[in-house]
Length: 134
Image: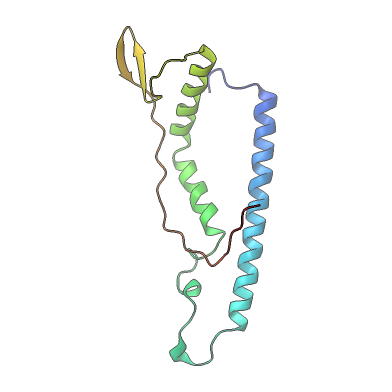
């Protein structure tokens, strides 16, 4: 990335981001193990009662599947995101304070297309987990 943030700041950000994602993955893995352990022990004995939807939709029903799918999407769009944030960083460093969107640039009075931020693909996640704000 051209003229990127200082290497110490970037290294610290990468370290914090990796640690946060490892913790998030560990929590989701423990939740999955606990839930599926309980679900296996409590399976209904009568075949007419069916099975929980989480068993039918494996592996997408796992809480761990969600961050993996998001990480895969990020890796697919990594270069486009890098170009977007690089352009944004360059504009901020240049001190541009005009009202142009990041997806357009003004050169010699003309509005030219710039780098657009890749859109996230919306996904219909299902979860039994109750999330509370901390």
